[in-house]
Image (tube, rainbow, N blue to C red; front, side, top):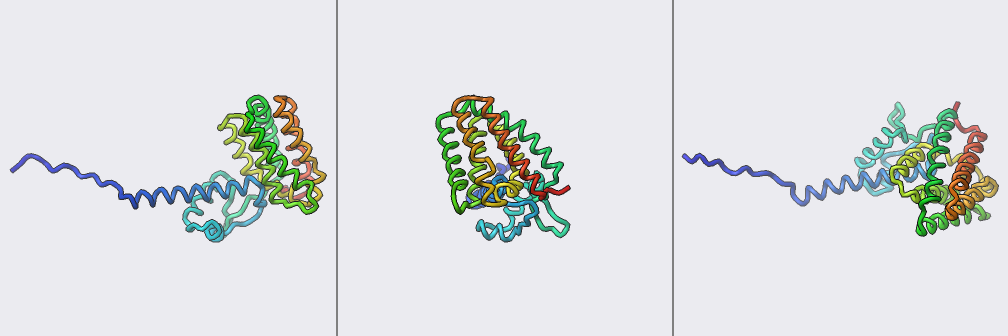
Length: 241
């Protein structure tokens, strides 16, 4: 009898199996990215409920990647599950809002300074494009609130990406996942708010300061923007006690 043993055969995944795994990861990431964008852009309001099936149908995916994406956002406290298993955007208390605003002033103010120090020519092009998009809505006789809040978010993040500090941008994204929906109480409350709220002027000052490399002025414009919006949001009475 031979003492030689048969070589061990290790199974390798078939090409189809590998493609299947990659597809599931890709779909889950896609859904997560789409929901994050809606939250950060202020396109979902506090208290707004979400149907997982509707999200799946809208994005053309199965329910599983939607559940995975929602579970991640629930763990981040960006969404919450109610006792009846419905999913909604969390309500915002006054105390929580003030805490997030204080952190934003410190972190995003620092980011504005860093952007003024490190911005590139392409960064400025992006900032000016989004500033112009926001201004178009602010000056329009029939402004589209959804477009305004998205332009506002994109302008801010064009500034934050100009820092060249991905870790800092990630921290700010985490803040905006929580604060973004409350922007509905600011820019979407009425058409007049876009024209008279002062955001367009703060944006102009911010972009000009970043372009000039004026760190202090960039921080001041950014914090004035945050504080102005925060003051108005508190005045609406829509935050919980």
